[in-house]
Image (cartoon, rainbow over all chains, first blue to last red; front, side, top):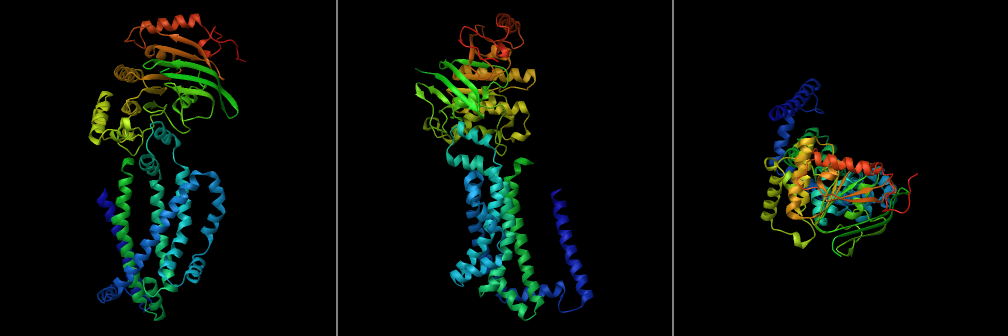
Amino acid sequence: MKSRNWLLRTASLLGLVALWWVAALIADSFVLPSPREVLLSFWSHTQSGELPYHLSATLGRVAVSFLLAMSIGVAIGIFMGRHRRLDIALDGALVLGLNIPALVTIVLCYIWFGLTDVAAVIAVALNKIPTVIVTVREGARAVDKRLLEVAQAYRLTRLHTLRQIYLPQLYPYLMAAARSGLALIWKIVLVVELLGRSNGVGFQLHTYYQFFDITSILAYTLAFAGVVFLIEAALMRPVENRLTRWRQ
Amino acid sequence: MTGLEVRIDEKRFNGKAVLRGLEFNARPGEFLALVGPSGTGKSTLLNLISGLDHNFTGSVSWDGEALYMPGESPSQLGIMFQEPRLMPWLTTLDNVRLVAQSRDASVVLNESQVTARAVELLREVGLADNLNTWPGQLSGGMQRRAALARAFMVSPRLLLLDEPFVSLDMPTGNRLRESLLALCQRQRPLVIYVTHDLREALAVADRVLFLSRPPARVILDYRVELAHPRQLEGPAVAQLQQTLSAQYPDLLSGLIDTSLSTEVDSP
């Protein structure tokens, strides 16, 4: 069963590549290079050390802003889910935060904090925090009070109540927030780099755009997609499987 | 005094009085059954005694100390709710081990002692083969066994049971009641066993407290003199039930006015 799932995933990816190849053959134009050309470009950018350098700069920003957004968003989300008055008080700000265009926060952060990595990371985190809050708040509202009564009656310590009774109920929501969070952060980090950093994948894409170097743009996209799949397969799915094994 | 002293002046729920003037005492090691028509606030009363709900007037004291700090339950309290309330993400063994991590220093054992004790209790309730099973894979009866083992994990001095074996088939219910009585024999906690089934109360308890309709109070405090072991379906219990029904025909509908009460507050 498991191996068949894997087969299906691979087959669908290969199908996508095949479609691309056929389209490139038909178009026969420099604006749609073939997978072969992109792969070669990817290889030469990697060998020159340029792609690993920019990719790691981007990865660093993604990691920091992801951790920042998750920890702040989870804390606020839990509080808002538990305390009705706080929820009402912060709800307006939350709606605003959810709807402010990413571009506005990014530009403002650069103007207020300067063209620095700190400003870049803050801008990305600010864009992500509201969606984390909304997801986690939903989870905190759904926490089963009857199980918390068990903890209270048996006088469990706060730490054990949190770790063994409270958080396990939040895990599905935390996983959802992490997944959608990572996806959003990738996208915003690139915009932040394009607008105000001198390295990173976003900066490189901007450069290649100016040269109309579509092969390089796709080569970077390929590297990017590779990293995303790696994180999903090596981190997200194993963690999720472990946390939900009691459901099987 | 030692033991439990319950003096509920009034407990309101959504503006309606559920309990009023409900009073009783119980000594350590006693086995009490609380019987009353459904909807009389028996579960509410257990919540007041367990400290889960402290929004009432009156007092509950345990060994002469008024209960409890708000949000606090008494130490060494064992409890079984109407539903098993196991953590679905913990194995059966871990569910029982969980409650050893309480704030009370007196119950703290080291890791292997905790495990050994939990395994021992689970064996005693007949779950030796299900230590590493998720609760979701256990039958309803087995989940209640696990909850029973969990309640004894804390070496309870006070044990509150809210219709713990309701809606189980007769043989399963009987086996669980036997396990409960065997564990109580050894550890001698003060037990309060809530049920709506008079026969069940007569089969397990030393004393049966009958509650009136809401606002509920104790209308009869009856000492059960039957020798153990008793059979729930046996002739002795059936005969006692008949005697009681003849003596107090309206007892279980909560309409009775016995010498214990001075006012009738039925409609």
